Length: 440
Image (cartoon, rainbow, N blue to C red):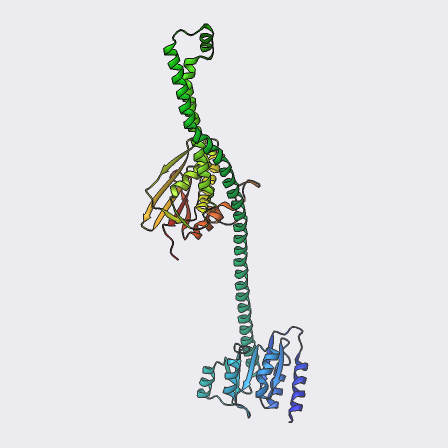
């Protein structure tokens, strides 16, 4: 029969067997004998879930398979233009058809040929013409197995895409929290540094001149005492004024007042130094710093909260200088200490509110900072969420949920670790481990 007649016969076969609008099984038969194609078409004609395609030209088989996307392929093993096993190799090497179930049809049941065909990757072997019931059963089995495999592959692909989207979302949220916190800390740091600078100049002027004032006052008092020694009997007017101003009290209290002013000015200088140490805007690169200075500066800034009834217990080990971004680590201490104070101050009935800060050298390459409070502790069900961006247990408007997330990112950036534990009295404990030195 001429090829064009075969083509018409193929179209007739396809059109006559589309009995279901949504077929589940798509069969492609490749056999050079038209009579075999017609016989198998008749076997499948009564199956509503089967759509049938036929090709009698092995050289066009791959192209047709790509076009009709069969769920199972029936293939003759002996054809005039191409070796059947060669066609099997072509199907298995093609990325579009490599996983489609392949059932070989042969007039002989030869073990050696079957073994070779199975070695090349066929899924089944039938002697033609097969029994209709067996043929339909095998077609359904292999098609459904293939469709299930495709569905599983699609599900895995969708799952992988979902994981990528979730990861991208986490990265987006992380970046968003970093941007928010970076802007927040940049503004805070600039404000703190600006305030510290504006206070520092006049305070240094006052502090620098207090010594001269002390000398001048002492000289004036010495002069008064000299006058009293040389002229023990002052005039009535002078004696009246001495009694009015209580000269003896002034002479005793003035040095004390001056000393108090000096202590106050020195205290302001310490606060300014702590503010500058906390912001450290001039240190964009890693520096080797004393962690205790950063902790103490943070405590000084939080002193107004500590005065509300919180006892700070410090147990400092003789730590080496730690290579870090100082302002960022100060922010970690600030966030953790603030949270500890929040927990303690919210419990108005609790007496003896305490925060313990311990530092130690765990080995020659790592330091550890433990911050513990004796508050109510952290519920087990939320421990795993505390470092998630935007997670907060505080009322709306009182917490952003960024503090501990930023702490985690900063410690991670320093190649360190941060973990949550329980304090000795059931409160919360944060353990921060940092390398002494960073290695690229």
